[in-house]
Image 1 (spheres, one colour):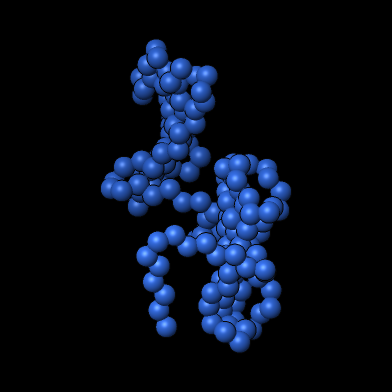
Image 2: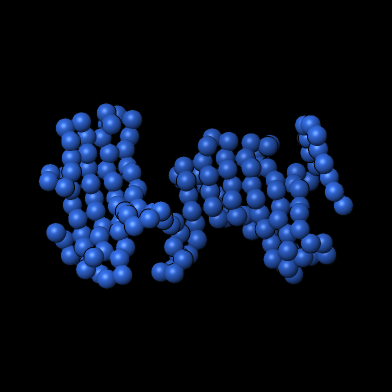
Amino acid sequence: MKMHVGGDLFVQTDLGELVMGFPENGNQWQFSTLGAGADLQFDSKPIGSNVFDTRFRMRQGGEFQVGDISSISAWAHIRNNSTIIKPNLKLEEEGNDFARLELTNNASGGAFWHVAGLPSSTAANAKLNFYFRNASGGGESDDNYRKWTGRYQYQ
């Protein structure tokens, strides 16, 4: 079976959801909206289950949530149990360099903090840096740079 749409497509159901997957209680994904169509939601259920769990929700106000979260408590919210093998969030740098997270605001005049991590095959070469920069500068020679190497060692 094929479906081809050459123009606009509007799907409206009495259920408020579109279910895709295997029939007769197989693995399924559910695409639906909440709040009279304001919020977009993806749910899934494994084979043999009758219960759909929320996997992703995007709110009309711009917030997005990963996991079964009912309240709006952050612009981006990930809820799940993490482990050392599978974290809740992973930043992976392309190449042998630091993976960086930037923190700033619109009143800082371009100032920012970076949290930068560099894994290594040896603890002595692994680094976690906190770096601040503003219009006056910043860098390794300034007091605005803090570096942790190895296991809980501050340099």
